[in-house]
Length: 556
Image 1 (cartoon, rainbow, N blue to C red):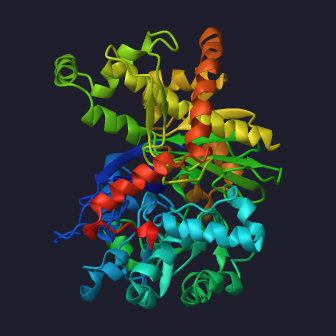
Image 2 (cartoon, helix red, strand yellow; image 1 turned 60 degrees about the vertical axis):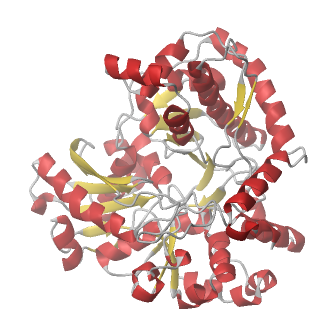
């Protein structure tokens, strides 16, 4: 038996998995006490900067203390039957730590400093730094820039670190190691620092065996010149390798035997390819939850505009792993359901024993394509692919006094599907064909959303069978690390689980969606590429109004 632990945006979950066939024997989840820290630090009333998203490292440890033992109890498996543990994490979620791995926010004199805290993947206030990195890299002709679709995201490691240097130099100087949470949690489990090739390749800037040069870092800021050497550089490990063995401290947290194998860390979406049996080339996997991450292996090395990153061995050793994504999907649906749905809908949902999402989906499902007369842009959390611009925001066009809530809900679902189609088209046009499409994550539970995606993409959608697809993927990697399977491909074939039935497109609806997609593309290019800058100006006005003293960071 092996255990996989998935650290998400709001909670962590653990699952006990049988190595012979991938059967899930028990699972448990733990909701983070502090959630996403956006308004102020715990115990403080001082407002945080706009677009800040932090987390508390103790929430991560609490997943090990609660979810793992609960999953073990639920499975009925004796602890001594477990041979390994694997983990995955949201990325780029990154934190500054001391040389022994202590998060700086846990040092008493730094607890009140925002930049001493872990920055969640959706921390977007480093956009000015990302813009600067992109401009300097383009000016210097840095070859690695094309491996990220031509732009580094504000979500990634270097932009966030440069922000710390600029905004709080003392915290930056006291940072011994700048580390992805995916690697930090493994450090907590096995007591030694390791770094995985996936986060280094996708969220760092590690390409062809090298980091950005000291000359490039100096061009950004002389104080940043030694960033790689001092805080980042470490030997990289391949996915599926053993990072070490479980320490006595971690064994006490989890209830697992000391000395079992701990797998090298991994990214939540990328680890799920093993669950989805999409480790072969051309098989795109979309992990659809609060956001969506699109990952795919290929034998082809190409430059795809707006891709999030490319890493050799980043999904499965030996192949090129591509990543793209959308910063807001389930988050957008949740925002609308929580803030824009009238009380009568909530009352009806409660009376019928449905969620508001289920009610809206039901009401929206039978409408003809385009009947609502709406098109939305799915940029409520910015655009991760293909524009790579988190200064953008959501747009809804076509509303009238007759527009109903379920129609807006449908338009938002369609917008996220159009965003995915834009990504698929970018890969295809770049000579990296998408042969099939698989969905995992929370959205596998919503038939309406899945049907919209099948119709918009005009292709069958395969579905991961597990509701804990990320955690199962981590468990599959644990099985490889513990020696139960020789490699990830073999383990995926034995332990991965995909439903037999596919969600198939309706030809008439698929054809009708072509017209709406044309409108989406027109709006996408106007607001995202057209140079009007209206969305950026609105964001700047908002941030100026929210920032104490009316000073906009991007103007400094």
